Length: 74
View (cartoon, rainbow, N blue to C red):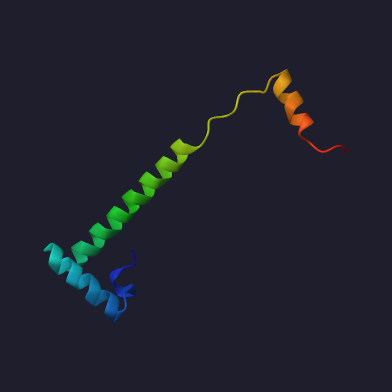
């Protein structure tokens, strides 16, 4: 999230309303919002890393033969 001085007046007013609704000062709200964004990004990166397929085992003779059979003739 952008820092306090980087916000336009409209953005600052919007965030101030949200902070008031949550019952905290604007500075604390923006810091908390940035902390949550960092945690979400770290969690998404961790999930993406977990979703990567493991290294495939070396293909056997028949698997390599099938791969070659599906390639066009040269």
